[in-house]
Length: 152
Image (cartoon, rainbow, N blue to C red; front, side, top):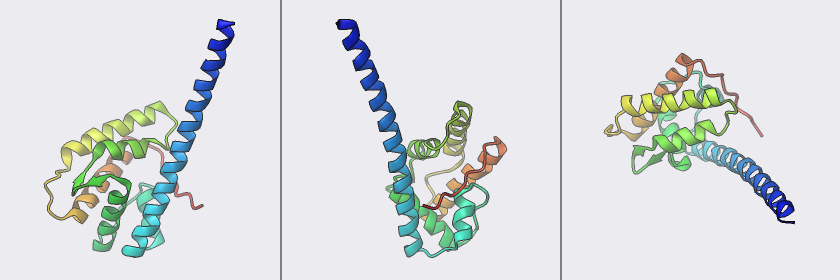
């Protein structure tokens, strides 16, 4: 009887963990979509610019784009009190990756950018921009797959 109880409890814990992971990913996707929508209202930028950033292709060097990124980072908790939170950035970036090798590359990108991007930048839009450029440049250098903007 004890064996049966242990097996059932193990299955319940495993199933609950999977549901929590899926819910967390759904919640992250919802949070990202809300941030993009709200920030586009505050800082109107083109859909092409958004796709380019989200797909990790290119970040336009434009003041409105820079402030859109800052806005999104603040809403996602990646920028707090005017500083980049690289751990939060790492978490949000890795949530959509299945491959452990790719997740390790994201860890590497996080460490590179943490060292290269100074949180001392006075202009918070510029800080968000520099951080994003660092992420995208290293994303490409490390050969991570292109992300695709999913419009729901």
